Length: 106
Image: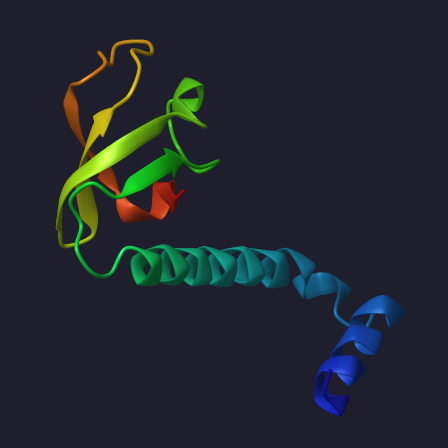
């Protein structure tokens, strides 16, 4: 950890930035989401067909979290996947489109 980061942590702990804590937490959350999307995009580079994925904790509806699927294709920031098992309104074998940010490579 750099001295600058340690100084910032010390100032936060000391209460120097209490009025901006909500903004700071929002900025950290946004940054973590950007990093997660970049990690997923990097993991999904290369040949897309047959790659196995799992829906992560960003997935809505929540009942799809943890479901596994196989990628059929990737177009831009979205993947077309085929689900392994039926869940809710989604039938097994049905192709659905999903943002890359909600898919983790298995």
